[in-house]
Amino acid sequence: MNKLNDLIRTSQEEMVNSLQECIKIKSISGQEEETLRSLEYFLNLGQGMGFKVSNVNGLGGIIEYGEGEKTIGIIVHLDVVPEGSGWKYPAYDGQIEDGKIYGRGAIDDKGPAVSALYALKAIKDSGVELTCKIQIIVGLDEETIWNKTPKLLGTIKEPDFSFVPDSKFPIIIAEKGLIWLEIKKDFSLETGNKSSNNKASNITITKIAGGNSLNIVPDYCEATLETGQDQIPKIKEKLKAFLADTKYKIDLAEGAEIKLVSHGKPAHAFSCGDGQNAISQLILFLGQLDFKDASNIRDEQNKFISTFAAKIGMEHYGESLGLAVEDQLTGKLTVSPGYLAMDNQSVTLRLDIRFPASENLDSMKAKVSSAFQCFKAEQNILDSLESLSFPENDPNIQKLLHVYREYTGDREAKPLGMGGTTFSKAFKRAVAFGPTFPGMAKVEHQPDEYMEIDHLMRCTEIYALAISELAKE
Image (tube, rainbow, N blue to C red; front, side):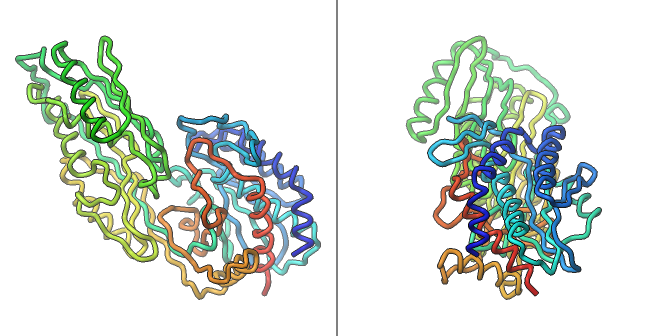
């Protein structure tokens, strides 16, 4: 252990520089050129350490060390969510301030990826003889719909057991299932475009737009309204009263049109209660406006807004939708509206729904479909993942738990469940192991995401020990 730690600590400057360079690559999930550039950088880093590396047809990559019939995997990803707004530090510079490396992906998941790589380097440099093969498997689509990863897994042989440094310690043995749902309605198909007799008092929604990544609570949503001059003072008065009552932040700009801008607080969708949903805030206010004189199409807009306000609103747990379920290990089902686009022709709403590990995917699909019938709209499941539950008494689980307890001195640490989704679900035998320790702030998917340098080093030490332990017969 001391030899491994010494090797790791002497590599600190090199590790920090590697993470900074990795953060500088703007590898937003779904943007092919930059995600592939991040993969190339990471594989070159591994090759320079003397490891065997391979780019698997642009689907992902493998960094490999050791020989043997048994294979231990470490699953990481280099794609990131969009940076969003509200940053004090540049999102793609890897700037260091007060011992913290700032940037999108610093903790999710580029920092842990670099940590795993240097942990494997320490194992190699220490001269420890392995009786198995170690593979770092690099994914490129963890933060969006998993299109590349299933193809990657169809090309390679899965490791016998893997851990995923993309959650928290001590170890995660249960994860909620996931449904990404799209609600879509074309107003023109049903309503025509009859004009109102009193246009001066109409309030027309020209556009609503908010959110750009389903696994982030949106912190921005805007609506553009057209109306007669007599309605503007009424809208301002209602907004003032609404903000005084709710303490939300919604700005109003008056010009040729009225523009309403809702400001929320981002958070990871699996912990949507930690954020403030800008879409929901704005919909709740629009639901207070008077659309009764509107044309049929505008009436359909109003019906959608009213349904959203009544059935979703600012709730996090699907109560009004009739979806409130929970279990002891992974907690409550969550519903997070992550994207909304509406004009006078159609509306598209997309939601992130996470269900407890005690529920199964097929049953939840049926329940979700029934719950959202109230919108009287087309439903599409964009992506779905079964929940994950791993036996606590599995020998590899016990090995990782032993490593954590020995490293931290926390003998009472027990396996956990969580609401997040990691690449553990993509593999047959994988669990999440770190990188955050108990009590650490949640900074993933937030502005000014960071990883402390000391945290980076501690993770590297514990991952080196984990590799050594899992490699034992």
